[in-house]
Length: 239
Image 1 (spheres, rainbow, N blue to C red):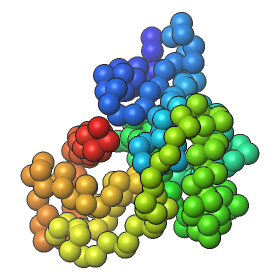
Image 2: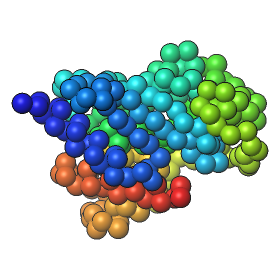
Image 3: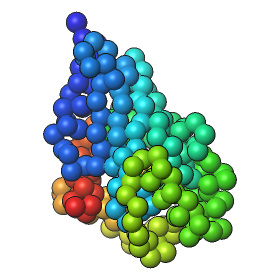
Image 4: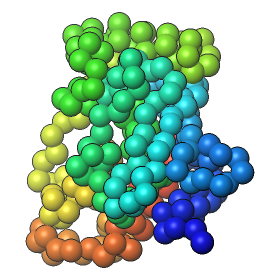
């Protein structure tokens, strides 16, 4: 009889396969389907980044305790990025460590990694050499990242106009940016890498009350649904 982990993984894989516009794919490493422990995924480089047009392979290990423990995810394809080790492919992302929650999914984890390709976090680097280059020499960093994308991820050799925006840090959100919602509640999703404005927009569209900034507990079902809506909105933006 399949374990609870295996049943959930099977369900999540179907969800990912039904959403090709998300810019990610995940399949079982064992084509026979006998094991749900090892998966391999792909992230397709987001537009207007040095990774555009590249196909990046990731290795995913699902612990027996999933979803109460996060999946272990590393890049197999070499990538030049501040939050990914250029040597081992290890990823520095809070939701793959202390900020993991059982309501998160393989899809939300992969989408959070894809968001890192759009907006690197140089404040919490995995590779300090890459991060230093991104901060001190943004143009050189972007060129280096694109060269690696062409060499290792099959990205096309073409001119990409980054307009100097790619490695700019996001400005700290103001109280008004939270739209009346409690910042810690919004943090459920910003900790995954999602932008405050998109989170607030989805909360309002779903009719989630703000209660004048009071913090209150959302159900796991609500958190999961809101996450799905955020992912869908991001996918729409990339089309």
